[in-house]
Amino acid sequence: MAFRKDFLWGAAASSYQIEGAVNEDGRGVSVWDTFSKKKGTTYEGATGEVACDHYHRYQEDVALMKALGLHAYRFSIAWPRILPDGAGAVNERGLDFYSRLVDELLAAGIQPFATLFHWDMPQALEDQGGWRHPESPNWFAAYTAAVVKKLSDRVKFWMPHNEPQCFIGMGHADAAHAPGLKLPWKDVLLAGHHALIAHGKSVQAIRAHAKQPAQVGYAPVGVVAYPSDPKNPHDVAAAQWGTFAVREKNQWNSGWWMDPVFLGTYPDDGLHVYGADVPKFTDADMKTIAEPLDWFGVNIYQGRPVRIGAAGTPEIAPFPPGYPHTTMRWPVTPEALYWGPRFYAERYKLPVYVTENGMANCDWLSADGKVHDPQRIQFLNGYIAALQRAAADGVDVRGYFQWSIMDNYEWAEGYRERFGLVFVDYETQRRIPKDSYYWYQNVIKRNGI
Ligand code: FCB
Image 1 (spheres, helix red, strand yellow):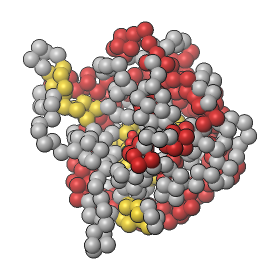
Image 2 (image 1 turned 135 degrees about the vertical axis):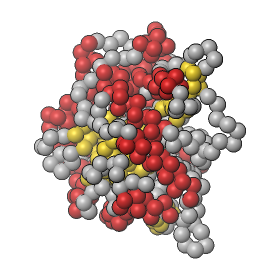
Image 3 (image 1 turned 120 degrees about the horizontal axis):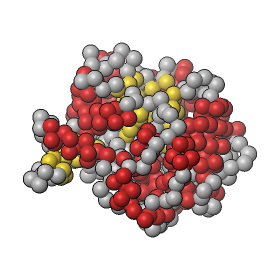
Image 4 (image 1 turned 30 degrees about the horizontal axis):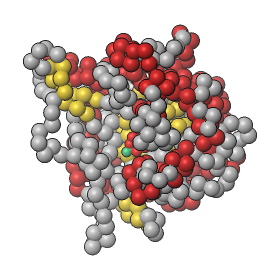
């Protein structure tokens, strides 16, 4: 079998996308509460105020995870539940929710994977400048310590950040996500630098306070290039280059957000492309950012085909007309789950966990009372088969998390995009496992495709 015997089959979700209960048990306001209430920021003005009401229904949700056969569940902790004002007194009632969730997971035989930051920064901190503030790494370290003290007797696997490319780039440059800013690139990169230092300080805080040896990773976006012709070594080299390259002044690359964390340096091409906008940084900063990790985690949804062009330089190859895509308009590129893990493992030399992968589909309830999602089954089949090939070729892949266990609040897209293995009828909060849920159950049982 390609996958290790102890391969972790998982699914993921995040706090603001599923919990709801935004005013309960002393939770403070997050940037997503503020942003989503502003006119024109999200599809149909949707907010996460109720979402999947997971805060009250977590037991039912964990029961669905157990019946699915999940080995691991990746969730995130809402910073404003723990520190309603961002800093200062810890709100025990907020911590208690995650404590109950973790107990429920462990009782179901499911390994908790905790993400500390999946984008819901306390508004009180944003009001002081958020990630642009030089103190933000210390705020994040203090928050990390509070969570780790409470949960680390039971939680072993941790990730400080989810996708800095998104909360920094989409939040601070594109105004597409909270906090909804359109800043000069210089300020965006400064916020990014602070977020990376915050990552390092959070790793230190995890190690300092963990009650058992912690397994710490990361969950950036995997911006993956794959070779147009996998048999052509020049295309393979071009794709490897394309996976890490910083080519344009935007956030969509792997190198800028990964090299500092795993290699302790910003990549040269990034320093060149971002030029005068690169923040001043010290050796001490880079040392903090590169605090050693135990595993490499990455969210991979799609890739771009890259080939060696006529001039002998790498170029992005076009998709043929009518190429398959999801309802997010993301191309369906299973190759990304072979080449991504392979390139990342080669460069960073750590075991790989795919911390997110999945697709949005136009799912609805059929007359037979079921939710049929053959596209998702086909999608996952292709991607997991590619990951399986990577494992067979010697890439040290340790786990895979499907995004998402259930339909949820897809940020600016509101509730119109459905990513779940479980369908959520938001009006009644009824959960209905989709066909893909039963298909994935079987994959887990067989440890692969
Ligand atoms: C990722 C996010 C996650 C979800 C999926 C579809 O970028 O980490 O919260 O929105 O995309």
